[in-house]
Amino acid sequence: MEANLKINADTAEGRRNVAQLADSFDALAKTLGGELGTQAAQAATKLRELGKQEEAIQKFQSLRAEVGATERSLKDLEREAQAYGQQIAAAGPPTAQETEHLAKLRTAASGAAQQLEQQRVALAASASELQSHGIASESANKALGRVRAEITQTAQAAGRLDPALAEVAAG
Image 1 (cartoon, rainbow, N blue to C red):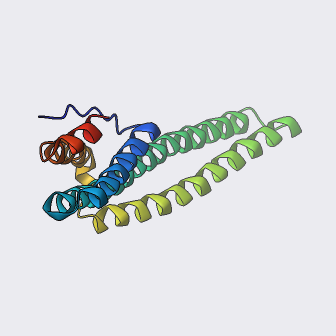
Image 2 (spheres, helix red, strand yellow; image 1 turned 180 degrees about the vertical axis):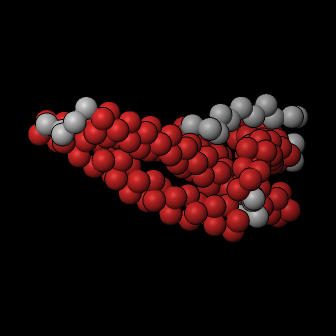
């Protein structure tokens, strides 16, 4: 009997489903005992590890996207401040309002630069976490597909061992 596993692991609900599936395999392992129980427990352990890998990859991807957005925003703010500064300098002595507006632009750019630095630190930590799972940050997208396929394969393989496991794997 082959289990038809459908876990959308790219959502919070999907991550819960992977964890719940692992918990169900553990519970069933205790009742089955013997070789089937051992295999169910091994499947649960593998599912938990794959779930951690998936979460680490998704966190990295999210942080990488945030860093990119902040970099673009910072560049835009810097260009705007520079262009505005040149414009008011060319027009003669700046008014108080123009000086205040330029200061606001520069403050916004400075804030974006600080935010970018914090995001880069978080991204580096996230990349280290990926590395601890044996995943290269440059191949995070491919790794995510592989991990999701392994989650499905692990659950389906466990489901083929015994009808009770198939029922758990199918949800």
